[in-house]
Amino acid sequence: MHNIRNFCIIAHIDHGKSTLADRLLEFTKTISKKNRNQLLDDMDLERERGITIKSHAVQMEYKYNGKVYILNLIDTPGHVDFSYEVSRSIAACEGALLVVDCTKSVQAQTISNLSLALKKNLVIIPILNKIDLSCSTYDEVMEEIMELVQCKMEDIIPVSAKNGLGIHHILEKIVTCIPSPKGDTKAPLQAIIFDSLYNPFTGIKVFFRVKNGSIQKGQKLRFMSTGKIYSAYEIGTLKLKHISKNRINTGDVGYVVSGIKNTYEVKVGDTITDANNPAEKAIEKFEEVKPMVFASIYPVDSDKYEELRSSMEKLHLNDASLSFKSESSPALGFGFYCGFLGLLHMEIVKDRLEREYNISVILTFPNVSYKVHLKNNKTIVVSNPSDFPEMEKFKKIEEPYVLVSIITKNIYIGNVISLCIGKRGKMIDNKNYLTSERIKIIFEMPLSEIVFDFYDKLKTISKGYASFDYSFIGYKNSDLRKITVLINHEKIEPLSLLVHKTKVFILAKKICQELSTLIPKHQFSIPIQVSVYGKIIARETIKALRKNVTDKCYGGDFTRKKKLIEKQKKGKKKMRKIGKVEIPSSAFMTFLKVKN
Image (cartoon, rainbow, N blue to C red; front, side, top):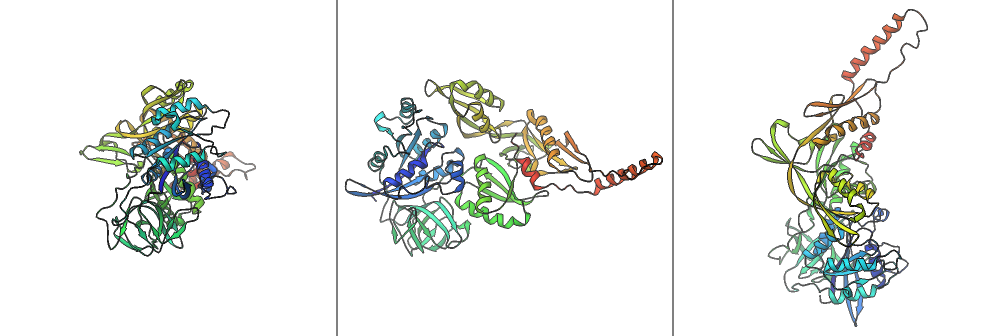
């Protein structure tokens, strides 16, 4: 146990986490230089987007002063939407490598991930990456890190992860500065689950860290939250290729295969103990994840509903921050109402369903949860606009607010402030200068205003030099309206929205215009309307497909043509009453991609 070091890498997106992990694996001879880059990012989606989506654990061995040390590394995501992955990784570690790109300086999400590590009292090793680039601002970033971590200049390790400069110094710091795990080797087994993975042949593979005691192959294990008992058919360590072992001791990280097939029997944060000599209490769990953005997922092919359910359950094993429940829609059939940590998380879940499970899905508009205070003095939480009560039934509505921290260059302050005020933001602080050219601005904003296109607009107006992070602060009173879309006088609930009263008319008009171009023409005219509490505020009409019924009339009195036109008009009127509008799924998919 004294030779074990558990640590993670925390940083902003594209600051070199995955490249640094590759070099650590090479220098410890865990892999050869012939291996591909970004080895721990094993999803195609991660490699295409250039981001880490999942935490990846791997074990290395490093010889220092004649002793062999076991280094358990967990490479964590950098985006704010995957902060739950970061928090789980931090809970299994005693130290963290804080990586900062010297060409981009300290970013908002760097500070966010660092605060998570400091709350858990992790030892922080600051690292300045990409020092070999000509565009680096070495001295300025050094000052920022010293102020951020409260350390001396000599404590910061300058490296180039790409070229391998300074990697040996990092490994020495890990061994000498990060403490070995604490635990009682003679106490009953206590191991916390920090991740799991579904395998169709062996069942669920559970990843854990042993806090007290040890786990042996063939041992009877109890999962404390469910009370279920299983045998440890296989246990092992998390090297690149998982290596089977007979015993895993206190402080180490490993995996166990117990033949579990039911996805609901494994919960991230649960404690594993010995079935015959159980621990008195479970290890403190991770904080429960709180979804911030809500949207519905429907299969394009309605016959694949059960297949989608199975895929969602397997995905939830590997992504504990995803929550979902069944729902149905007259227009889209059966699907699931899901909670996500953010917009990027939502996009990643959709892409993983389509790539890993081969299911084409439709995503509805993202929404947030609201508190509705009814006139009977009850309070309900509404996250689906279709569940919103009628206007006469409630007294007030409260919507979630977040504290937004934006770090940008001072020349873009005016643009950033204008964007935030346009999103109903209230400035809290604009005097926090990190350097002479970089400033941190803090705004208080409704969450609903940043879940659509805020990040894209922020990057555009700052030419890519702004980063932002947000944290939930509570609910505040708001004047909201429910927008309901009617197609041929029928309500289409998946297209319902809750918006602030100042944006109701603009958005209603855009919705009508967009749908009028996406829905194909039918044999009868189709009215597209948007209503707010029963009052129609916008309308567009898709004209009917018409046959030229007078084409065969080459002559004669005009009354012959008029008679045919009147006959056609009666037929169209009858068809409008009994006809059904068929909205292709492609129209929904195109429309729901509209961010504004």
